[in-house]
Length: 419
Image (cartoon, rainbow, N blue to C red; front, side):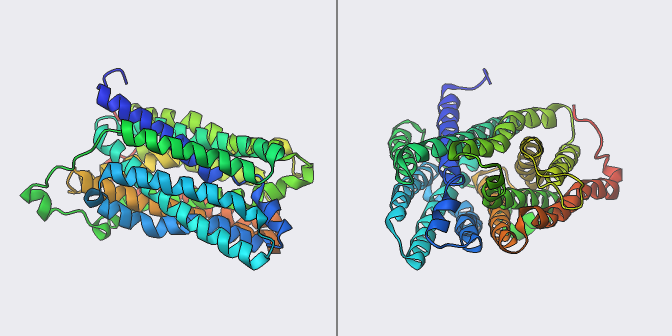
């Protein structure tokens, strides 16, 4: 990274800090919102959808934001996203004063939708700026930014749980919301302005469109792996706090449990970026990562057909494994999506980067929405352990998909080590 210019370093620092703050905002409520919602008469199925609507909105908005990021402007969309999320975070603090169940649910949904719009704007521009500014080193930089995002997921639940113990439901959201406001103003001053270059006549003919992108078989594999991985994250975000109640942990201790997956993801993401650049073909790295996350869900519950009792040791081990495996899936999918698009005739410009960012963000968000919603329903009807059969079956198909792909494309020598 010593080869970067001062402009690139400034961009990297602002993107890194933005990812930390945004991840904090996304993960802050996980350790204590379920108990708060239940105290207002909200069932797991409903608060599962409150978790999930955030990612549903991201799923729907990401392709649109990715498509129009060039017209709106990268810096403008980046900062508007940050500011919208900061206002939503501060507003969410005050729902604790709403005692009517239906009003609590309605206001929660409304604020979560606003926060999701802001997070989508930030995520699409963050991915696009990374692909533009670090075109020769996308995998390594994206992996490092993934570490920053994972760090935010560590800080969010841990600090959120601690502040909740000190000041109740109000304090975590007020503190983080104010920090986001301050960072937004800092970003307005410090983040470089990105001018979109005018497309050439050839690029106008090769305009980036969603359907041709989805027809690329490699991208279909990446998108399915990303969807399944994020589905399982959404599933345990909704259900993990309930699953942990049997161990009688404090809010701070539960918050600490939520940092494990993000912590190991943070450590592994840059390593996967370097590995896929210098050692392993991305498809093979995806295969390894998929097998790891499949194995992790076997022991998280643990699976109901295993003769094992639930324990903190098994849950901690499973979360660590999931973080390592998902590091491969996430980094390989996005970086591979950009590469596959360019290899299949898409122009190497802002429009293509924005389109790929939007599609992959949308897929990731859709998985989180379906997973968190399914997690709430499973808790209501089956409990965390029995309900884990669904993600286990899904992860099995993910684990074998890269193998099937490699065998079907054997002539392309997918196992060849990159040099």
